[in-house]
Length: 407
Image (tube, rainbow, N blue to C red; front, side, top):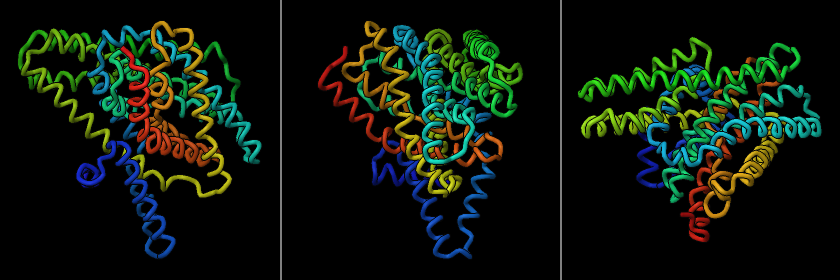
């Protein structure tokens, strides 16, 4: 928290960069300085200390089992259901079929490049990498969309896709990882059934806890209690989803939409609405800053092997290519709903940012020969995504909107 406050102050006072970019960049720079000092003075043990600190934080558990539920609920709370409904087909296709296509493209290309470089890695582990790197991060994406001048439907489409493909991506990753760890053949039928149960089960849990929270909030008028109810929805709802083995991220996205639209409109007076929305805006901002700070610190976990680093660098264009392949064809057939002209193209293609969810899934892998390779590739892709795409997507979208205004 001290680091978050110091870096946020320095960024606001002197740099003026997007917060996700500043937090990740400055934390990564600090980690690199520590690694450099460790080379100059090996006896200091600074690198070992930072590595130990990062490992004790347990990024994977902290994010996937803690912060993620709050971040997804807070993000969905501000998505307009009406605008999202207009973009429902692009959201549905991109957050399901798009993730699966991207997983297949990334996995295949990653395997071919690794073979060319002489790095031995089984094909199934390449598809594990494809699954964990394919979801766009709702935290990173929505942070960028807040600063752009995109039409409301486009903003809701990009936000909705990132919210739901995050949950879908976690499900796909879990299924592919189970096949990789067990060593058994991959069954499309069993995987499809598991996918449907996880995704639709998450939707059902989200609707149930969201409606219960809405009904309870509508029956009273006390903003402190209503604020506690929103916290209960997030913490209890996510715990329930994990307990019955359905997608917690999908459940939180759905619950956030219910409270953010029906709850805000029909269950809260002006005082409650002001307190609830400001509270969750603070939670969103705070956890967002902590998350990107942790991403920057994780640079100490990457492999120093030159060939692995080269493979990780080449993974960046592979992931960008997969994004184009998984987005352009579906949207071409849905061009009557959302056109790729104007700001839509840059927002959906260059704005498909990867973030903490991918890093957390990579860190959740058990120790083995594949882990350093996949972790290094994931980290460099995420670092490029946050620092380069995150810093440039807003100007690209604004320039495209100026050339081709979209109503």
